[in-house]
Length: 106
Image 1 (cartoon, helix red, strand yellow):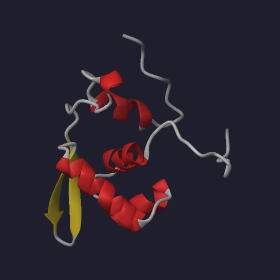
Image 2 (cartoon, rainbow, N blue to C red):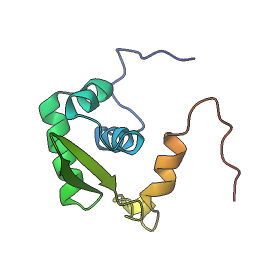
Image 3 (cartoon, one colour):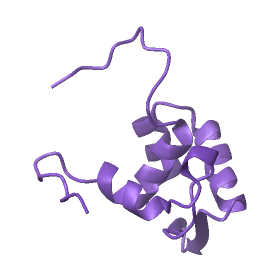
């Protein structure tokens, strides 16, 4: 198992992607917990969630004192290299528990 290296200056999945993965794994997650898990400030987590909501990737509904988030899994990725690809299958792949085998290739 690899360990995080403090000298790394880039990651394969952006903070926006990491926040989306947090929401996919727990639609009732608190922004404080998102920030801790992604290792960003709570304010940065708020801005990222606002970006995701404004772009139509996430909807937010108040449920008592908490927010409930829903992901639009059919929304296509934003980078030109991935136009036509929906985010749902990517979230499924990256949120797969490590002990499970990878999904079969189509």
